[in-house]
Each structure stands twice: as C-alpha cells, then as structure tokens.
Image: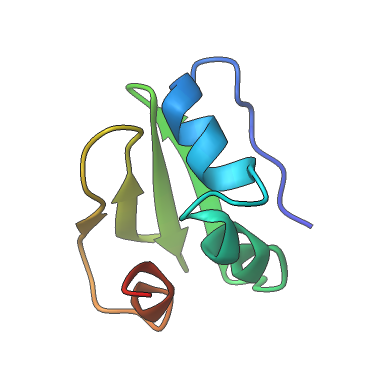
Length: 78
C-alpha cells in the first residue's frame, strides 16, 4: 500500500486523487497494487516514478504531464 505525505499537496489534487468520484481516483487505486511505483509531493503536485524514473506529474487544476509512456496513462484517458 502506497502512502504519501499530503501536507503540501494542492487541495484540488487531493479531491481529484482521493475522492471516490475524482478523475484521478482509478489511477490512485492502480498505484496501490504496483510495487514498482513511488510517488512524492513536490511543488503541490504529485510526481510518480516507476523504478526510479519519473513517468507522470499530476496537478490539481492543470492537465497531467506524461513524462514517459506507461500503462497508467490509459487510466488518465478515460
């Protein structure tokens, strides 16, 4: 189970990620079961890494930034 420090996370991002009806919630659920993933809050955004390489940056109000192609991207396009 992945845990992250949400102290400095944007409130909009928290709603999108952790809210049952949030558009990032399916992504958060998939991240829980993937041991290769880590995530860190930087500049109020969530930076997601697979095996130490950044793959994705999630923000509260702006669109997600896909850094590297990953199967998690498909969850964003729904």
